[in-house]
Length: 472
Ligand code: 5AD
Ligand code: SF4
Image (cartoon, rainbow, N blue to C red; front, side, top):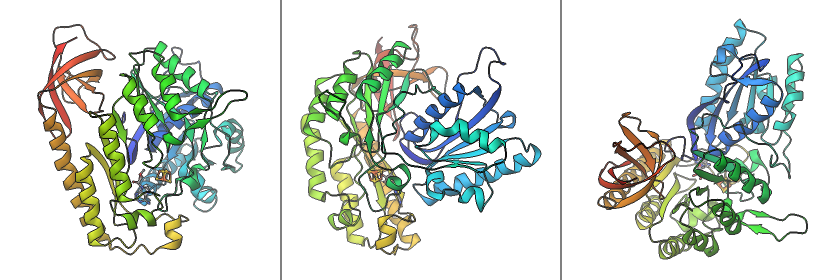
């Protein structure tokens, strides 16, 4: 999944998140260290946790060896994600032998899924805190400090942390993620999220617009509205008209014409024409939709409980292309779901070709305990077959990504500069509206991160467009 700024679902990505450091090193009485795994929602949650901890007198550190409190914000989406976290927890556990005062806490989806197990049976951690329980962290820390078991994995129907102003961690100061809802009601049969993150609930629209306005005032130029299923956003305040996702998008787009708006993730069944027309109406709403297909075969989609057919998905892609001809589309794809035949796998390859995805996050099926699929269907595709099918999917995507980038050669894009390119300080890196990364040489103009520039594309790789500045 791309890099930290855009990749939304990658359990393997590891972020070390640091609150801005106090000018006065003695401002905070204690230090916390936090690592985030998994989807962007987890990174966003870590910023809420940082805010709660700052209030309690905890400052951030990038060095876990000096931390009084080490936190891992974890992901359960695939087994591999959990293995990665377990390994890391074991390392921290070893550290603790030398410094018994150090507290270790597990947050997020693994905390919710495994509950007290990591604390009681495996004795890996001192605190277990689920995604809806972060407000109780101060009390839990106190309990853990006195050697008690500190566990809160209660899920909530209301919690959205709407009033908590996140402390931006590891931020480039230009792009930020804003959580607009929590949980998921979809019950895709493969997915553990409805169990670890609970029921879907939308955050107060006023607080979302306020947070985005505040970011803009601080110099941010791009906000990504985050939710498991943003198109089902729906908020009703007392005595006010309800706000749906299209209306929320418009409210955020109206904050300022030079504040870009992105969103993720869209469920194909819920994205409406209204949303597409709102995207078309505002130049600053980026023309990019992450529209996970999961499988290209109707029978498999039915087993997955995705509630759409192959044809319905294809019609949705047609509609996007009709209303937004220059829109980038990306996908999530699962190889080797229960009972998937070779022909059904071919349907996935062909729907990729049809949709011409610019990019995809691709996985092989990993059975998750407690999910509908784990209870109902046998995980019967041999691992070697899953991996071979995944390789075929990746090969198709690589070809599609290169073809999509080649089509952009000769075009000029408005690019938001995010910073230096990874390869060279002589080059800028930014993105176009379609979310493609563009690298281009710095010229004599006094530009900086956060500026918009026009860039003419003259070359590309599979992952990157390469260009030159036309005008600043
Ligand atoms: N196995 C493999 N991939 C999964 N995903 C979700 N659950 C599983 C699973 N059990 C993928 C889906 C989803 C993305 C976030 O992760 O493609 O869209
Ligand atoms: Fe999981 Fe489906 Fe919800 Fe996405 S939409 S989080 S895949 S249940």
